[in-house]
Image (spheres, rainbow, N blue to C red):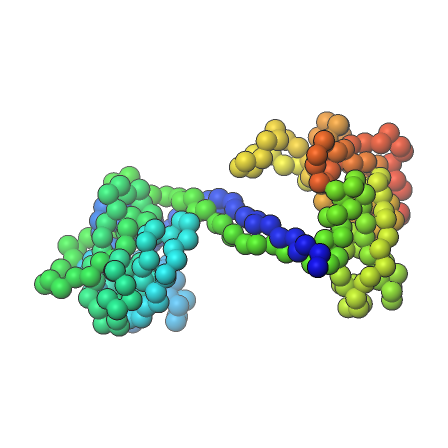
Length: 313
């Protein structure tokens, strides 16, 4: 049986956003060990707070402090914490309705096992030792059997409010290419580009997908394309990516390899970024031991006529 290719992949990027007055007060409050909600026109207190009433769409600004204690309304056990989660030992994900709130807040509950948590468990906030104005300022919840804690009556006015946050978005997964893309990757290791032709519309797709996205029929006929190609569209990258040793600015482009009916993407090198253009003829550049082209460079040929690639934009 042939080897099944697979590889761990990570998609990660920082998401930067500014905060309105309600979210700013909420996160600044966490920094100061204060939990704030927002009161709706119907008198309900929402925690976490939102800027518009989910029922009436009215703008909400009436901030009110709630207690750092509350009750578990539902839970699920996490036996294998993943990178970036609140705790590195098994814990319960819980929805907690804090005392004084009418909605529940999602966070982690630090308990020794699933037998130690149930709906109705009383809990309290465990604050992080160092706080910066983020949801992680609540390190987790912990069981609590003491007297109710009364909020201090904060109105949400704080010195040096938090006005923006950077949230890291990350997806870890294992990629298995399947029959068609395995053949494509094997050909790349030999410095060749191979696609598959649709038996119905006769289009050649590179990278192959195993089926025609237009006709919906399986593809099996392999067709070697390239190595040269044409830049169809491109963008200039001005933000340096984490763990990518390429100086900005650089150009990333869609490239229609000769004989292909689908443009693939690749970096353009060997030419100043401000001279890259639609129709530029390019060829792959390989580095020793690489399984795919490092980048594409100009061939020196005249630019391709727009009519030859307009259908691939």
